[in-house]
Image 1 (tube, rainbow, N blue to C red):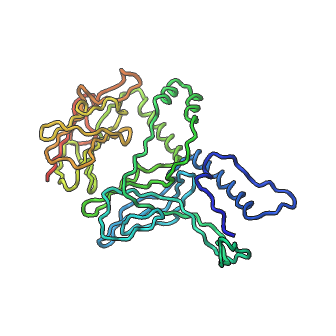
Image 2 (tube, rainbow, N blue to C red; image 1 turned 90 degrees about the horizontal axis):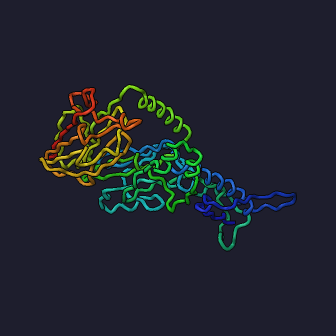
Image 3 (cartoon, rainbow, N blue to C red; image 1 turned 45 degrees about the vertical axis):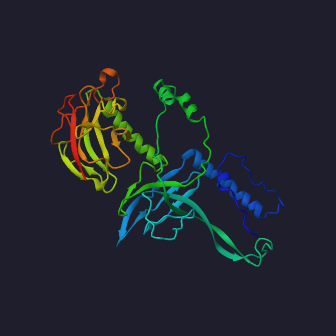
Length: 399
């Protein structure tokens, strides 16, 4: 008989579980054995989806590879859980060389010499295939026709999808309501707030591994972290708790910890980012490298993100004329100011203010907050050990 086709999305939804009730003399057939399997599969997938959530559990690192004149990607082994709670195991490295768009089954589309789109998304998707064919003593005359064999096993495998587009960054934030409950010590009410909704299974269950930018000459640049969902396993949470404890010890001790600039990186859309070796270094960047902006990493005291304002605490000038760049926070202590397209040629000067209106630290009370220690020298981090002073750096964009 043909195997029963199951609805994988339905197995991960909230539905009334059903399992076999055995009794002496009960006749077991395919439907009963399928019911037994689906009961256990559905329980596992609902638990994976609602208790852990979708994302990468471990591994699945993505890197650019090159062979001859061809560029592609290598995906390392690892484990993920998709949006429907299904485990996806990749046991060995996989190379996508040359890199091409794929169809919904992960099969590369025919190469017609059309250049790749400028923005690509690499996703990992769950797949099943049948194997272990063996004789079927009672073939289905309507569905199987003249066949006299059936697959005896399912193989839980995967497919790698490459399609045009850009996946959104994963955003994890503390909502104002939740933050207020925690500040007031109302833990039970905070837990009730978090447990209020049961999320529905998504339409697309695939796990995003990376965004890929394709340069003018086919060069590939990977953004593997921000768009990638990660499953917070107990191992990860323990490590985070250890680091948070150390961070609390650092930020809450009685002596003053000043907010400083610890590093500056110029963001390139085509090629590796440029890290300034010293605070007063001036770099010349060719526009062909597609300079997008900069990231500044703060050290010492935690930064008060509300104190950051383009044109105020952060000033960007091109040939003496103010330039407004979007302000983002890819990490709590890392400020990003960048555009989607390349910056126009010119001499850029960036000021991170330690004087009014200053970039401020976060204190236990408003009186504990300190402005940026910003005076630049030859060594990182910035500052002279006293709060205040503006931090400047410059770079040149040539045609």
